Length: 383
Image (cartoon, rainbow, N blue to C red; front, top):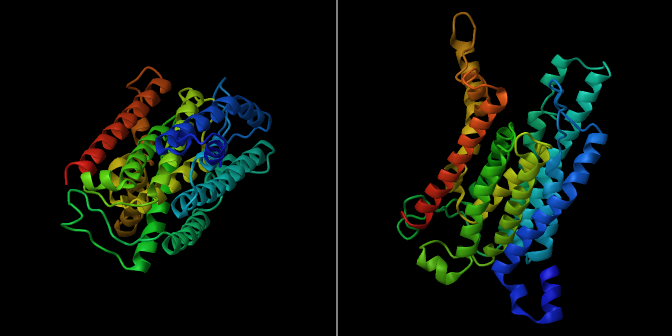
């Protein structure tokens, strides 16, 4: 670990300081993305690593940008994070979920090339647009999260199924789940967060800001809960060792800020499933480890809204088709996920599709920032 090496060489306590290590991790991750992304984009363009068809004169940007982001975050974390069961659990989930998403991205690229070769129709391509099947992806989510959950439960001292309730002090109500239920909760939260982030990644930069805001909230909680005095002052559980998630959060934020340089509309590269699933998964895992999983629907309300729009659309259509006389299902939204609903709803109200998408993106970003403020207010004060 770089920070340990610098401390052993100089004996300067600064290199062991949590705030310094978090700031350094953020700067290193962002620097790696800034420096390597132009080369990476050129490489993906040469490989024709795209999943969408060209629109007019604009060539579709490549996907799999998330692979570089994940690699940068992991490298920066390994340099400035003290490895313990908390940080290892988070980094393993990040790598494992990014691997699942990477397979998905590769399958999408392969299927699109089959269309170009005439071996697959566009209709068949659309039906296979998710790459690997949803069932297989869900199985892999649960498999990896179960392995990490069991590891965390065994090697993190004091990790238990206690839940921090919104609006309620822990000494008033601090409900506890049995072991099996808490491990299941870890799997469900991690999987749901990954799915929510994946559904959100549909427009230029749309998923980046929710990842930043949820990581910022988790980072604040990790830093404060790792300090016994601050934890007591804010009336939150003291989590020794949990503060090592703080540099991981700042590394994610740094990589996202650098990524926005290239992904801001019009995007030069897309995150792809490797990034959205990887970062969504690690955010869910960190929220559980920090005992703030019930705050994820508040701070990550955009993830929740995007995921629930898909669930409601599918379930609502199936139910109405089953019970209607003409067997014609009805859709709750014009299209899911939610941002596509607004694309169709507001179509024609703006001078161009680019203006429409920008309006949707910025409004979703503002919701993410407001959700961060509300979640922080509830967690740190209104209890």
